[in-house]
Length: 325
Image 1: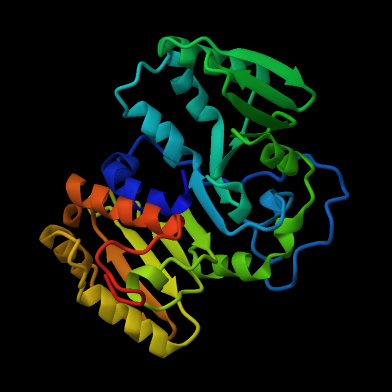
Image 2: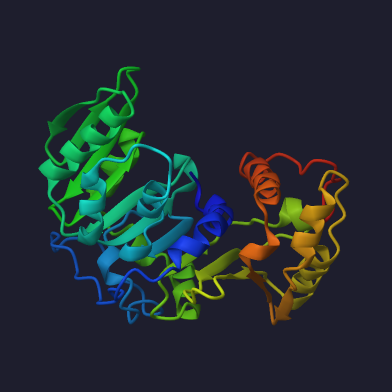
């Protein structure tokens, strides 16, 4: 799954993600126990942000980065509220998770999930085996140092990497997991991406930052990235989205495309939902507020298809190149 798709899928989960579940843990994440050689220190523009040191060991080349506080973990929330037969060990794992990150490298396909917390490798692997057993699938686990390989009956593998027992990450591409285990520290030098965190409130429980262009094929103007945060008011759950452009005139053009969707392939309901975003231009940004009430299931599915086409580099259905939605 790519991070951009979470902007839509979160709308399904907002009511449960924002429902009070006891006192929220907002203590700063402790820095992981890592070797002292992690490459150069963070650049001046980002080194003062306390959210950077815990993840400074991530590799470079990151395009999209998302953070979920432990009690708002996207994956754990999905499992808890899904119809799947989830074993009890999943609920026992949740209090041990402090944070979930989703990281996208352009050359690596779907995002890699990275968890931080008070973890136990043997218990985690046993829980994974129990989870798949509940689905009627037998999974074999093999260890190679810090790497665990989980193989299902179809022969498809999932690779799980460990940094001590504080960090666990998993993906079906072994080279990507191994790149993280090298702990090169390349992410700490990405000042353009990490600098976006300065616009995210320090206490935000969920945030997403990206330097990806997500608007060219939708709105006819290229964006330089986006910032998204999730409000935690149970009475008014919402996503605040900032689309970033190189100059104000481009932001104005993009806002006009949101206010007046034009694609013949979009349903009337989808057009109304998009127009309801009420874009506001602030300098070179377009800011929108996404409310769950404006997006029913059919509209979300429709918009998700558009996002998937963008990720594949396809033209938006029914739109000429450079046309708005």
